[in-house]
Length: 117
Image (cartoon, rainbow, N blue to C red; front, side, top):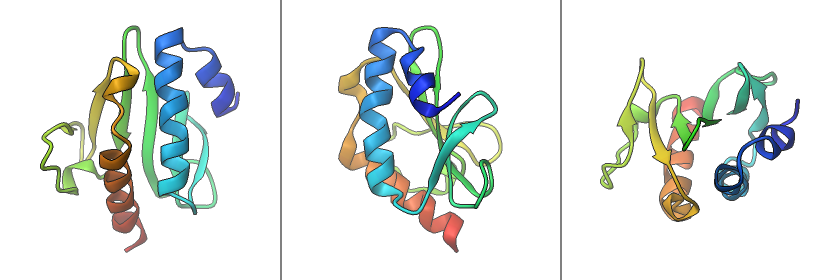
């Protein structure tokens, strides 16, 4: 399954969120590889999926999670990133309007810098 296949399988509003996120991720992480890993899209800086992962998209019943592997290490004055397991942090997106391209691009660049260091 490809990332496009995954997004196509999401219900309409969630698919729209994913389709808005993917070009933001691609623009902010030009050297990253996007691939399916553990059942959902993950963007990594390594040569294979999951090697030096930066972010993920995962669809649930009524929302999409946009997660950053080292999100707890990223400054987030917006307060939108919610800490998760280990160093991860994520934001829950319920509608396309929840996607903030400028904010998310900043998070992605910061996350990539952490992984590149």
